[in-house]
Length: 91
Image (cartoon, rainbow, N blue to C red; front, top):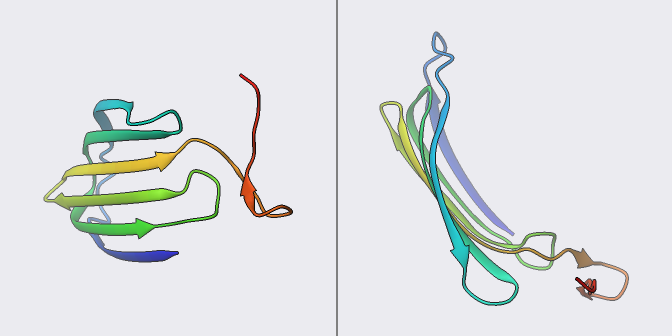
């Protein structure tokens, strides 16, 4: 897993609004999300890339002066550490 995060938050603000969310599927198990939101962050940067864990994928966010965008591409399945494979559930 790679995780990089830098954040400066306004300590006198409790501003939070989830804003709008757009999402869709890429394949049978891969999905994407884009979220525009209002936050208390002055500056926010986050990057995460994960494999072999629940909902593994790419997660990035960028925020400036109280407005932020978050983009996420992930696998909706759960990782089974006992057999080192994705769990299979009949839907």
